[in-house]
Length: 87
Length: 87
Length: 87
Length: 87
Image 1 (cartoon, helix red, strand yellow):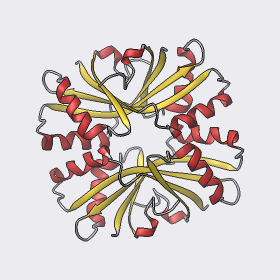
Image 2 (cartoon, chains in turn purple, cyan, green, brown; image 1 turned 135 degrees about the horizontal axis):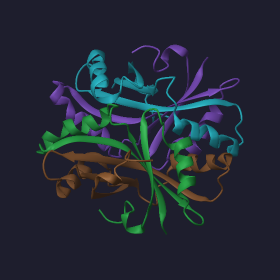
Image 3 (cartoon, rainbow over the protein chains, first blue to last red; image 1 turned 90 degrees about the vertical axis):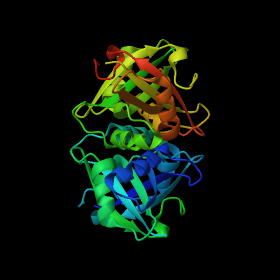
Image 4 (tube, rainbow over the protein chains, first blue to last red; image 1 turned 180 degrees about the vertical axis):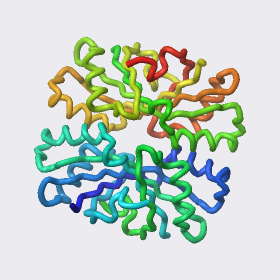
């Protein structure tokens, strides 16, 4: 079943200390070619009927993202992009 | 610049109370056609050189996801899928 | 105004990769005496009337924590323990 | 073992949509006396030796909180306040 995905990320000008922590931990894994890590949220919304992008956008705007500090995008995804399908 | 995105979601059999809270709040917005909401994490990793999927997978496995309760996928994204590009 | 605080932490036996990332990043800050870092959630609930611990516990159980992987505690706090009061 | 707890909350003037979602979901549980719900992070830091509040504050400032949008407090806790001790 296709679903709507809302990706929420801190605005680029807002510092992300948790992403920074991951980036700072990488040298201990032997990784030295990462410029930045940013951690946001991914929300998967399943509709009972036809997925509705406008509706999802309204939900994101009211309940999922804080427009002052975060940006979000809304898009339809097919089953095989779904997280967990394979890693 | 292309980047690698890691999507981390709770395994399907693990309850997601925060997603449940959003789903339960929807009727008050007049939304009644949502079957489920699941909240995960989206991590954007920017490499200084060529994006490296295998490396990203290793980072995810060690520092981003808990394999006991979460699934993750790793993929390359182009600039226009990037969250914040447009909403 | 006193409020109820719900602290939600992953159960001790569940790995916390985000806390691990912070712990792994510490040597770069010159910190070498930290044994572990665990990242959970803190939820502050303000009641319109008398704070109600039983109610808060029910909310936590249904909408804030996942009992399979997380433990939570519920307690009343006075204003001066409130995060943000001073750091 | 006593540990240091860092509580990180969005500044009061910053909207918290996830807390809002929980608040909006409460009437469906029959709860109508909650004025607000705010969701933050609780970080437990265990030191190998003597817990060090100044050190914890520095860690919080660099890797746990974003001072532009979040406030944090740092404090020592005794075992019985620890989340998970009892719920």
